[in-house]
Length: 130
Image (cartoon, rainbow, N blue to C red; front, top):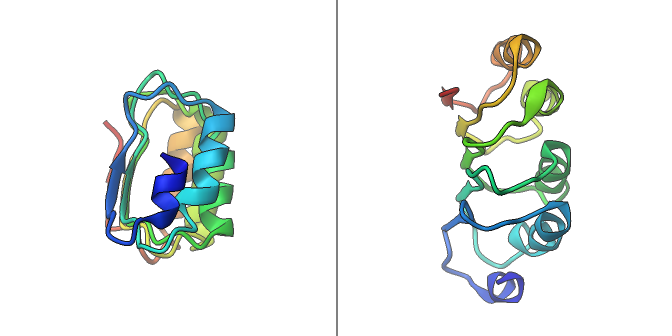
């Protein structure tokens, strides 16, 4: 998959929701996902089988200047720490193309941080917390 992504100039959306990916798999994909010739716009990692670190994913998106506009992380728990890390990136406008985000699995602290990030984020248009 990773090698194919690197050579695709037309792929706009990828849904890896039912893959059993861990941090290593996401790292390998990130190297190719965010640095291929096309412009990936939508990424779905929504599933309880994916055990990624939100920090690793966000760091990879920032490092590779991701063009992703839609990110679906719903269906697994990112926890308050993951929500806070994501909120910090949003508040700093470090993900300038991200306009739609679906995320869940966090508590009060994560929610407060995500909502606070909306005050300074200039790109996000829709936040799905279901």
